[in-house]
Image 1 (cartoon, rainbow, N blue to C red):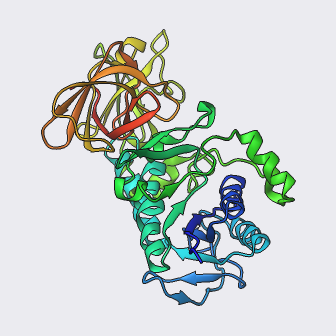
Image 2 (cartoon, rainbow, N blue to C red):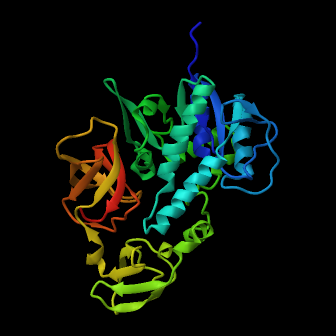
Image 3 (spheres, one colour):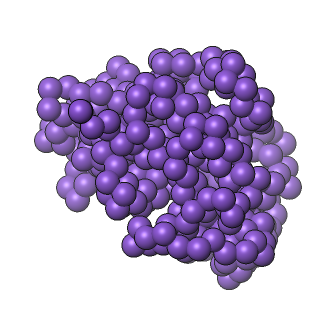
Length: 375
């Protein structure tokens, strides 16, 4: 008898990952559900099992504090696994996730604006999670992301979701091609409405569960609070200056600001102004008109490719943040895994610390991390 392929499904307790698990089970895969415990309060219900860092079964602890992904989420994920009659594990990523939050704070302290969701995918969902897949002998891994994976000959490919309003390929650019080769995205050709309708038909109580809109460890959107708790030394009073040199006022710490910010500046210049530069060396916030926030040749570092790394400039559509519409540019490779994106038209609020992702049509070619607004 032919062995069914075993697939490890990351189940967050939301409707997307739950439906992904249901679809794969329906398609005949040998599905194993896992919940990523990211904080000290995210202990799963006693009916579930916990894997330690070596992939062995370990006893679940007792809840002490509420963490980043709630106990209620773990309960929802376990309930879906129970309905499917599939094994369900909770993976303790608390220590790894703490490193990710530290990195988030370090980036803000260095006057950069990080994207922790990209790193969570790169380090945990498609990093540590693969180690657990190997530990239990899983052939494949799957998530509820809206994206599509495939093959171009012998090369694995990552593409946008069929419906661009939900596309999440931007946050997945850092997947190792060897991992992408064994990754499934069951929702890649579905709309959110179709996903909720499928969950409703199955009788899943979470079919109308609200969608998470914010960084999971900053649900109140108070990023400065998180940074202050870990890097209080980053909050030093400094000057707010106009690009023309005028002193407009003072600020209480660079982590309160990001490039392109217009609201909450608490200074006036007689016309609309935006944050144009953050200088940690002088602890200065520079503001100016909209033109001061336009960039044409930003650079990115730590670039990784899902295709053969180009040795000559290539044409691509380049996306500089999650909600940015990818814009046409010439991508020029530079030494030390860097590139310069020469946009056909200047782009607004290119922000150091954010991801820069390159597309050819719907295919993700690669990406890196914005280091400078101009090359």
